[in-house]
Length: 119
Image 1 (cartoon, rainbow, N blue to C red):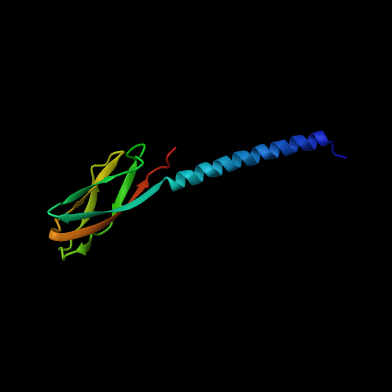
Image 2: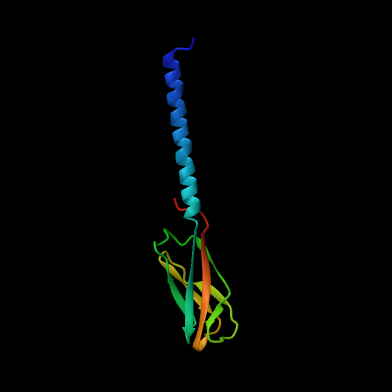
């Protein structure tokens, strides 16, 4: 017969190992969730840029931002391209190659992806 003391010790070790695995899993999932942030902005009239605030701020600037093609949501602005510049922990700027013009507005989507998970 196996001693109850040995069983209790093995059970305690098993619980500790499961607890450690659970903590690692939660840490990994939290890191993956914190890796991406998405949003959108609008640019109207004679503006060629719009600041984007990151709330909450990022811990560093170790991220990349992809910007979608501007979509006309008001008026009939000419086709243009958009890109992100001026990266900081609190935000970045979306630029368009050409202003939409008076009475026109672009909608621009963006995705921020961290190059490594937030610790």
